[in-house]
Structures are given as structure tokens and as C-alpha cells.
Amino acid sequence: MNLVEKLLKIEKGEYTAEQTMRLKSPRLSKLTGEDVQVVIKELGQQQYLDLAALNLDADGNPDTGKAFDTNAKIVATALIEPDVKNPDLLKHLGVATPADAVKVLFRGETRILADKVGELCGYGEDVEKQVEVIKNL
Image 1: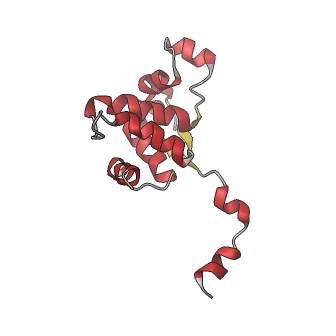
Image 2: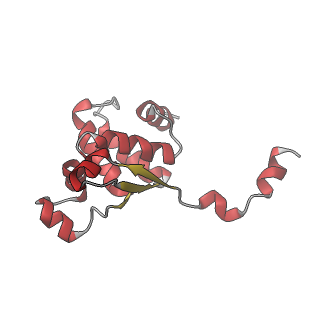
């Protein structure tokens, strides 16, 4: 059986099904006193690339000064649970945006979660380099 024949046997909806991932949050687990898992979802390719591009300077090079903000925006967009768009949560945390809520809730875990979103979107561990290569094609 060739590759096309194998692909034809896959349910059409499988190609566009949104992928999700559950991850343990050590920070939220510590804060709540119990194991906490967060749920992230795959983003559309263009949506992910647009968000990842926020981390680039005017010359298209990664700007480490923008990394935390960019990662927080990626995570806020992909996060299903907890719902960082919830107005009550935003008010409780004293923040204005879902990305700001991510910064408060996850701190150092933000980068890890953003990398996992990248993996769900089809990019490996070195997401920034891959995004740059794709943008230059």
C-alpha cells in the first residue's frame, strides 16, 4: 500500500481535528495544594506564526526582551483550562488581559507551556528557528 492509499483510509476529520494536551502545573499544584493539570489546544498555523512573530525585532531576529510577553500571549490563546479569559479570574488577579493572567499564574512555566503549544502546532523543540525558516520560505 502506498502513502496516498494510507492517507485515503484516514477519516477526513482526523486531518483537521484540534489536538489538545494535558500538562501538570507544578506552580498551580503548589498554590492549590493538589495536583493541577492545565489543558492547552493546538492553534491554527497562521495564528501561531503571527503570535510567534511578536518575538522578532524589525530585522526578523529573535528579541529576547519580548520572549516572556510573546510566550504569555501564545499560552493565553491556547489555554483551555484554566480559562484565563474569565472576567472574574482577571479581576481577582488584578490584571487586564489573559496574557497578564498567564504571567501571574505560571511565571517560569510560561515558556514550557508555550513550547508545548508549539509542539501541538507541529513545531519541535526549537520553535523559534523553525518559525523563522518557514517565514523565509
